[in-house]
Image (cartoon, rainbow, N blue to C red):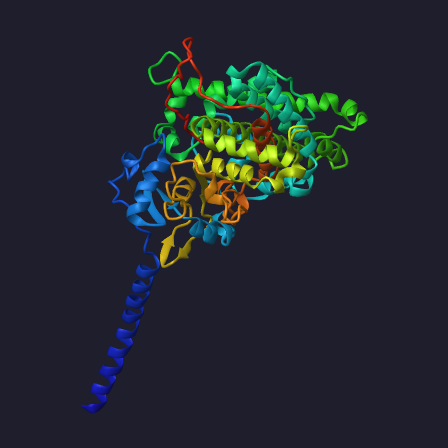
Length: 490
């Protein structure tokens, strides 16, 4: 009797052990796979109906107040992780960049002709080659050499503003592209009405609105819209996609052909560009690798143009709005320039360290209206952070808008206050919005050094030479206006 009881006990123990193992593993999986908090999704639709698709960052910021720094939502069947703080963005996108450096699939990229922008390319060998080509030209040491040209172009912009103040946006755009076109293609833009500036403007006017996951949902759900005949109701998106593709193809090919045609002449005059130098290097490569290299070079060049145009122009528009809306800020910045530089010459980069208030104006411009209110990443593998499970293939959104609107860090965040970046002694604080507005990790903007210098040269030159004020009607009365922003990728 006793032996049978002993055998039964052993059998019971052996039976319980696997079950216990399964229970323990299940508990570990449940704890380890707990998703970050977020609003309850609807069946099939997820949270898509709750999101402001034109300004999704506003919705994400509302959710941040309820759910915290990490918010998990679903757009249809796609998981989306929203990061609402700089600390968490750095912890994931910077320190775990191996996992968080991919790009999400955006259904409008290919149909609208944006595949030649390597910012949307998946993380891999092609992206690394494009990034390397870009970095060689726009790294800090190389970008330093652009400064004389940036100052020269900023002063040309001032001449345009004085002669034709009504078309200030066009002058900002010409300035933004003049630097990028020269560095990238060796192309010298006209002072006004340059054909390539018009081409880029027309191309981006269509596409930038559609390059976000929230806007791309329509094509993801209804891909057949791209196959409807032009006369059919609902074919507008197809026609827009075709127009965008045609313009983006021209934006890629026209300046590239220009460089090929003028390489010899530009080299003879000591004018080099990213495309020309790399085309010369390509001649030494074997024939099998040339097509891949040229395709990557076209992507790197196109990305430089698109990035320079839209971002720099938008920052300068925000700066102009701030100067009109906050005239006291403009006067203080001008007074600082007068006291440091004097009135016998114009500011140069050598004066930058001596103009802390102008620097704070630049920082506040980047923070006040961040031109990239969200940045897009995607996970290439599963991850666990702070006890939360983040699945492979999740779209990861860095909510720059919420970071810039943190009331604890930036009291009265919607107000333009450059002094928030200055200490009691009149020096600059360590808080620099450039640390988050240009993105994070391996996907951080590779042209940020040149962009920073372009924006500073334009701002300091405008402050030294012109005054921004509200427009007036024929009777001399100020024309009241409400600022409106065109939303999309930028």
